Length: 112
Image (cartoon, rainbow, N blue to C red; front, side, top):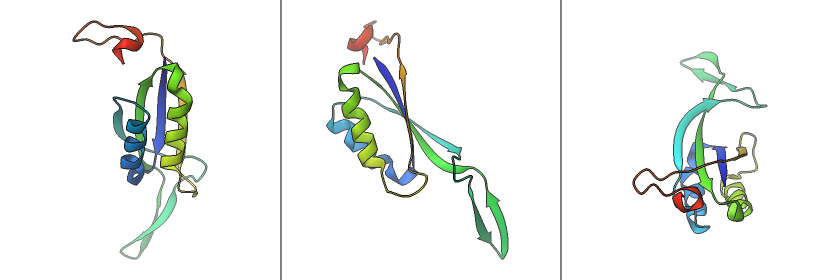
């Protein structure tokens, strides 16, 4: 099992959710986050004053998936979140040692 964490632009959330659903991901966790990467934020003009926006709004999507579908999940996220512009985001994959469904006490891939 793997935990896939994707940081994407907020307006791409629906596209990523639909793409994950099409490859069989049954559940995701979504968090509104702020951060920056290589772009280091940007400057904006507000009421004639220029100011720096250091942390840009992003969406963090987490999905626990079976290792067998990992490549499909990565491809689905990559295609759905891609705009071709700076700040499209990142995908992180970490090993998931255990998963337990609280309601039924199922463990492992059956809990996903």
